[in-house]
Length: 391
Image 1 (cartoon, rainbow, N blue to C red):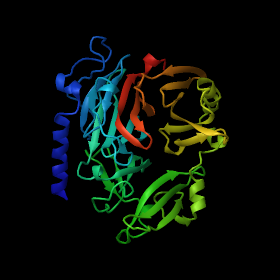
Image 2 (cartoon, one colour):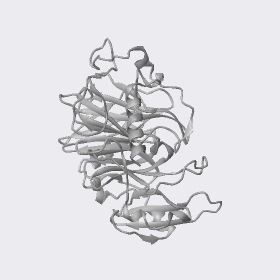
Image 3 (cartoon, one colour):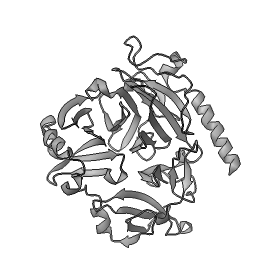
Image 4 (cartoon, one colour):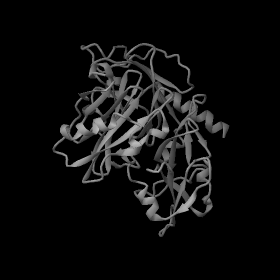
C-alpha cells in the first residue's frame, strides 16, 4: 500500500510538471501574464504558490474582466477558449471527464471531476486571485465513475462506482466506495461510511447512488454489478454514520423530488429569484428548480416553488448576503442585500452549456461541457473576477 501511495505521488508530480493537451501551454510554457491585460487575455501566473493545504497547487490565478478557460483531462489544462479544447470523443457521462458536482467547503470551491480528482479553488492573497489545487489518485479514481458528490465529516467526498451499463468493469470494486479530501493529505483517501457497509461485497453488492431527499434523509441504492439479472435494494438513513433502513422502490423514487417551498425558506432571496426567472426565459415552458450550493451542507440540494409543467433547472450558489443562479446558457440572476441584478457569463460555442457555478472569494468559477444527449465531449472550467459581472 505504501509503495502504491509513493507511486501515486510521483505520478501526480509528473502530471503537474506539464500538460500536453493544452495548445496555449504548448505555445507559451512560461505563462506569466494576468487575465486583466487585454493584450494577453485568459492567462495565469505560475509563480510558486505557498498555501496551507497539502494538495498540489497548480497555479495562482489572477483574474480580471477576461475569463480564464481550462479543460479537464489528466489534469486541468489552460486553453484560449472552449472552441480550442481538445477534440474529445463523445462518451457517456459515466466515462467522460466533466464536473460531476460542486461543493463549498471552508471558503473553498471544490469541483469533483469524473475520472479525475478534486479541483479546488482557494481564495488568493489579493482581490481577484485564487489558488488552483488539484488532488488526484490516478491509479484509483480514474477507474470509477463519480455517482455522488457530498460532504462527510466536514470534508468533500465522492461516491465512486463501477459502470457496467456502457462498458464491462475492468477493475474490482474498492473495499470502501467513498473517497474524501482532507487538507492534511495531498491525495484523496478511501474512507468507510458506515451506512454503506451493510450488504456484502463478495455477493456483488455495490452502492451506486446517493442523494439527499426532500425530507432531509439520505437515500442510496445497492446494485449487483456484473449480474445478468442484478438485485437492487433501496435504503434510507438520517445520518450517513449510522446504518440505514430498507425501503420500497416507490419511497426511493419519491426522494428524487426537489425540496418544498417551506424548506426553500432558508434562502430568503430564492423566492425573489424564482419570480424573475420566467421573465428571463419566457421561451422555456417550465417552473424553476434551483440546484443550490451552500457552505452549510444541510442547505444544499434542489429547491422548487411549483410542481407544474417541465423543469427549468438553474444552478445556484449562496454565501452570506449574496445568492445567485445561472441557466445553462450562461444567463444569471443574483440577489445582494435585497437588490436584484442580471448578469451574463462569457458565451459558449453551440452545443456547449454551463453545469454549475460558485464563488471562491470574489472569483466566480463555472463548469462547462459539450453535450450530445447523454454523452459529453470537451469539458472544463471558466474563471472570472465576479466584480466585473456586477457582484
